[in-house]
Amino acid sequence: MLKYIVKRLILMIPVLLLMTLVVFSIFYFAPGDPVSRIAGPNVTEEVYKSIQKKYGLDQPFVVQYLRFLKSVAEGDLGISILQDRPVLEMIKERLPVTLQIGLLGFAITFAIAIPAGVAAAVKKNTAVDYLCMTGSLLGIAVPTFWLGMLLLYVFAYKLRWFPISGDGSFKQLVLPGFAIGLTNAAITARMVRSSMLEVLKQDYVRTARSKGLLEKTVVYRHALKNALIPVITLMGLRLGWILGGSVALEIIFSIPGIGRLMVDAILSRDFPVVQGSMLVLTSSIILANILADILYAIVDPRIRYG
Amino acid sequence: MSIYQSRDVKAHADKVWFERDTVLEKKHDKDISILLDFIRKLFKHKGAVIGAAIILVFILTAVFAPWLTSYDYESPDINAMLQAPSWEHPFGTDEFGRDILTRIIYGSRISLKVSLIAVAVSLVIGTVLGALAGYYGGVVDYIITSITDIAWSFPTTLLAIAFIAALGPGLQNVIIAIALASWSGYCRVVRGEVLSLRQREFIEAARILGMSDSRIIFKHILPNALTPVVVMATLELPKAIVIEASLSFLGLGAQPPLPSWGVILDSGKGLIGQAPWVSFFPGLMIMLVVLGFNLFGDALRDVLDPKS
Image (cartoon, rainbow over all chains, first blue to last red; front, side, top):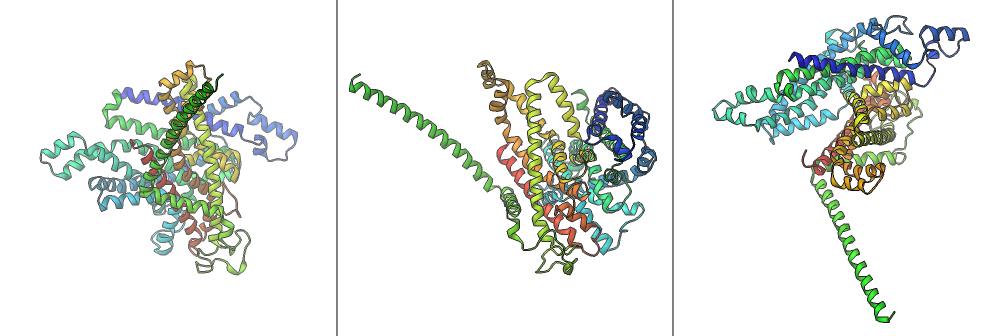
């Protein structure tokens, strides 16, 4: 097992390198002069030269990239142009809120998708199944940020159960968490259903039934465990989607998360902040995929010998 | 040459042509019957019919926008600010007194345009890269596959935001960003198809006959990979619509006063308490259109590929 994990982590290195290369190149090849991005369009020749030198912008691509890589490896993501503060510090302030929304979203996803998916599979082609699958169809189609606005209108403006905007307290995170959880549950429930249907056809389930076990025991203790294995990989992939969806939600609910930091930085052309938050988001997505792979291997030993 | 001989020759030629025509007719008949069979199956599929109906209404709305409404989507009307839905303004008006329904109708043009162009471009990029990777293998395959896998593991929205960060906000850049962010799916599918087709006899035969690589790829391999690509493109269209709306909502895409559905949603963001209709209807439209494309795409997959 340890060997598999080490192997998987080593395989992650080229992916991370390529990712940094992509993020770096996006900004290197972006139209517009990088110096005037930092200093504005009207600068004297002298100032121009000094800024070019200060940020190493007169060096060739490879040198600039290696320098960028070195500072990232040292945990230095540069200085914000607008706020004149280390980017890493700004991200550290913002990241926890976004992660909380994401975790809450995941919890809600599981709380809804597993029972719904199992019920739909067990009662295949009945009203329960059709209801769950219609709900899932609608949930996949609904834009997450619009669902967030609907929830805000009903539960904050009309029922006044939650604050309309605020300080990032936990209570404020519940509605965006639900917006993510509900839409994410739609796609997950579909997956749980088809995976469960697959498992229920297997011989060992028939054996369990013929032993005279209660249907409930067969479904929940024997079948569900195996049916959830493919869902783990899906969840690893969905983290990126959740982070992407959380950007608009942070703006609707005025929550100071990393998504809002990034969008504000893009609009004010604060490139170091954009680059930094992009790096943090993308590496967390890569990490989540690896974690899902490892978790997959732990619960399903067949993978390791494949 | 005697008259009989020439008559024989003519009769023979007629016979040959007649046979050729019947063969062609039969082939033509077969093509038509496959097509008819496909359409019949699609019509039996409830999802396909509902989906197609929604898509049709969406496209007709976009095409005939100026005939569907008497209001202007741009110019303000200070006598009609923030009115709730009524007979005059079925979806209400926004903070400038503009008719929301009108803005949504014109907004469908933006959604349609962005999604069609972005999907077409990403389809071409992905197909070409996938064909190159699958056909040539080796280093070419390794490089393309590595890049594709990374692009694939990131959500399209975030990738598109990254490209917007570099290109700057704007509707045209949104099209470029979505195209550049969503080709990886096609690349994977086409590469897989090409890999499995490359070893088949008819490709071997084409190679032995001395056909050029590009001719083999475009004339003999790619047409066979068409089905999964078409299904994928149908399901990518709604994604492009949602991404355009989200980016415009964030201020990174279409800019006001353009009536993009995302821009209307954004203008309703601060008015949820007093004028919820401003953001309710554009979101509902996005949901309906996405639902239509998803239903149709799923049905298309069921009918075209019974295996999955």
